[in-house]
Image (cartoon, rainbow, N blue to C red; front, side, top):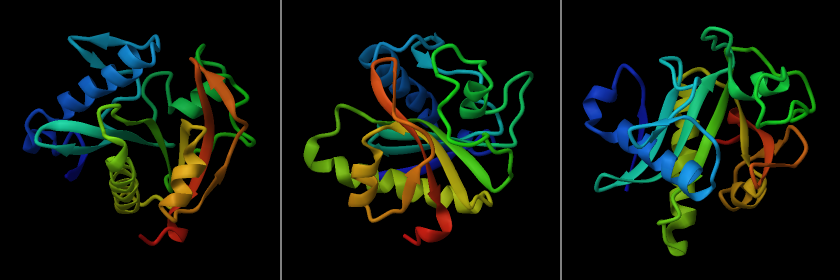
Length: 195
């Protein structure tokens, strides 16, 4: 099992890994969860998949097991910034604007995680290992990018698997149902998670 952080600068070094990640996102979010998201040629993508973002893939033998997208809270592309902030500003129909307890930050030390998933094909006996690899690479990548915090719109069961991985995070907004999924914004302090 490997973990890789992809960017526009290094994706050419990893063959079809980014394409496979977007295919796995389509399988998870569109085919499995039935979310109404943009897609083309079997890939799920949106306005936040820009050169400012990074994508983390947990993979084995070319198969994507899990993934996350990281976007700086300072990102700006046309009228869009990052998903949580744009939702709070009322720009996204599918995500309620009251998703945070505070104003969405714009800070180079805070990055957003989104499109978090573990493939349904990952057997139950390997899920914790895959989640641990995903979180470890997210923290490593975040620190390398200068982040001290990661703000994420994640499945509301996050506290269960975060505690199993001995990581520290806290709720940053209320639990809410989004497209049939119980969801919540959480914030992780990277300096408190030394793994």
